[in-house]
Image 1 (cartoon, rainbow, N blue to C red):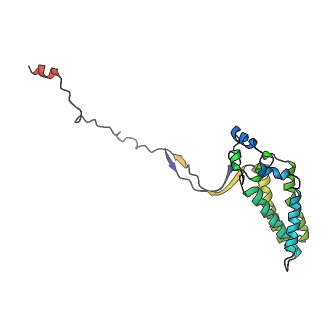
Image 2 (cartoon, rainbow, N blue to C red):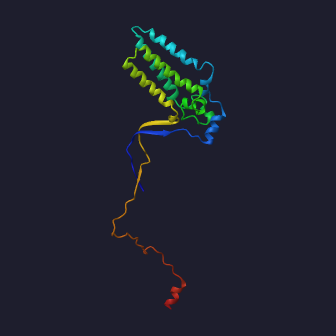
Amino acid sequence: MRSRPRRPSMVKVESVGNRSAEDVLDQNTYVNNNANWVNSKGAWLIHVVLICVGKIIIDTMPGMSPQISWTLVNLFYLALSYLMFHWVTGIPFQSDMHGGAYDDLTLWEQIDDGAQYTPAKKWLFSVPCVLFLASTHYTNYNPWLFAVNFAALAFVLIPKLPQLHRQRVRFMTEDISGTPTTASFPPSGSSTPTIAKSTANVPVIITEEHFNRKH
């Protein structure tokens, strides 16, 4: 069987992370401090504080209008949220304690052991939506700014959907395995090659019977 190389795929969706018994045991051996902080006291309030501080800093810039200010606050928060929850994978510290069970999982997939519709995930889902509504209102429903803010919101909310849990979208991936092709055979009616047996190198064993025959 020969393999024929395939062209690179434009878009490919792959599943990551094993739910084997070994991985589940490694994940439950120690507490995952990388994800458990989202359920700690003050963890929800920090999002509001960051948004307010960012708004104050941006407003201090000269020539900044309220429309651009709210748009920048929304974009900066969404970019930081996507980077933290959906881009970085694994555990940045003490990753060997879990046997590499979290190496392929994002922070969002690690929260509450991957359970969906938990209070923490509902909060993290609602904050970008409320900020988007606020930025849309204070930009006076400008269609261009609305399109920018909505595109950024969709880019952050789509990875949070349960349908994309442990799924990765790859672009321009090349399939190394290739497509198997049928082996070629000689055309019908052609002679089948045979292997000639050569006896030139076969050793001759001389026994006592050879001398008796001569006499």
